[in-house]
Image (cartoon, rainbow, N blue to C red; front, side, top):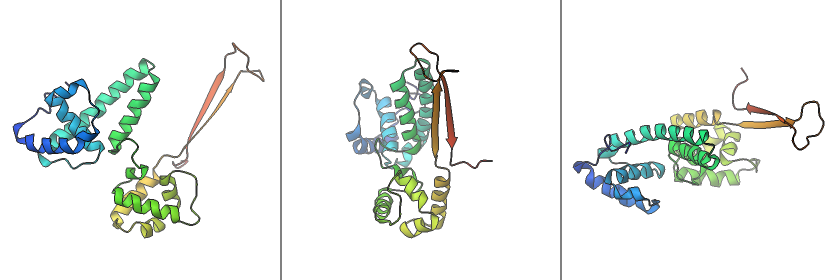
Length: 212
């Protein structure tokens, strides 16, 4: 209903929308709203974004509206879930918000978060990281890619130009590296007993940020 007035189905979009729908519909999760043409249009555009399918020019304006409004709706939904203490629903909304922001499908390769990376670059990068001597065997592929440094990345990934590599450098420099520690104890007591009131201290350290 939120999109019916702003992104209605238009006759001049029918062919492009139908072709795009055929491409992404195999991934659809079916629900009752699929009977509504306006809902199906929005659903098609959202799936195209998550699957990184090219959106035709005739649908670009509506596509932009859908993405802009979706983030607002998800923020509202997140507030409701948190107020009602729906833990699983809250985690699902947060995860989907991240996927929507990054244009990623569920369980996509994490390297697709990097700017200018497509599956070809991901495969090349993964193969080279696995064969790289001295590279850390632990950590995520993004952490490993950051660890080897900019000069080595440029040798490994020759499909990107210098400007694109600079975007990758900026992304990796700002990629979150967060450490969380906690301490739970009863004041003035060495051990906690049933019925005691615990004081919980949580420390969040953002290691990727400069100390100043």
